[in-house]
Image (cartoon, rainbow, N blue to C red; front, side, top):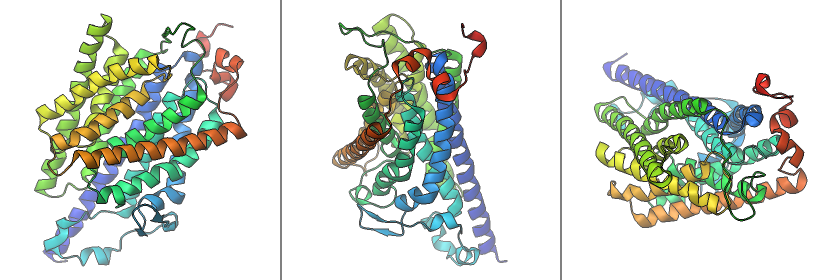
Length: 423
């Protein structure tokens, strides 16, 4: 084999391996969401939230294989509607002969890696978007109604708006920028969550008759903190993997910059949220610090490459401040979100998209606003219709008695912490 083919072989293998390991890091975020949500709900609802998280991941993997990937990355389409391609489920990958036939001089003009690795990286993103929904509707939604929605969300709603940007659709043509998914993943998940929450209603006892907001503390703050650190770690794959390749000097430097900026934004979010909470409440609220970290990560996800580390810290810091005020505002509006998912992924996701032109000269505020509104409007509308149909057919809310006793027993037939339950 000649030197050129040796280089291409090594480059293909390295980029494929990098893609797969990045996907594995993002898959690990499923554990982060599970632990975060399990820590922020009450003990009597822990087993059910864990069941939702592992089941939604499995559903996302199956539905994206069956149809989601073909919708999001079709062989053809008119920019709005893709030409559905269902061939992926039957297997196949890049032909080694065709790969090696590529001219070495133009090798780095494209991204050359296994098609299977691309699917694996994309499917864990779908599961991330659906995980956002699970926390927002926690403690009062029927398990099987939630999973029915997951089928539609991961198989159709998410992939279609993903096609509009990442699959070469009309948002991409307009110049909308979303490097790793502040909009495509996070705002999409938050919009679906908001639709579900509005139809579902608040938990019993969350809001008083005179407008007071009653705190419902989570059961396990160490678990919630562990979940946040897992998500922080997984985000390096989320943003870093979105650079797609690493096998040359320029791309390796870009990946390193993405890692540094992702970390800086998370740190900025923590500090800003903690200071904001101290000023507003007179206390260093741990839950706000945790949400601040996630807000910083969501904010930088739309553009983690162009900013300097200092600017990335500021972008994350603004996200950390925003999330505190967003959570307070949601409660004032009586939108009950037990984990703050809509605020973290929705409100701060919008900020992340709008911050892109401040560091990326190729982006415009108009294109970013069009993308933001399109993703939010499509996802909210499609999700609201889907939730409404499910509500009419099966119902979406557990009975008042089940909610009082905890959905663990009613929905799953077991308790997460049986030794601590009073009989």
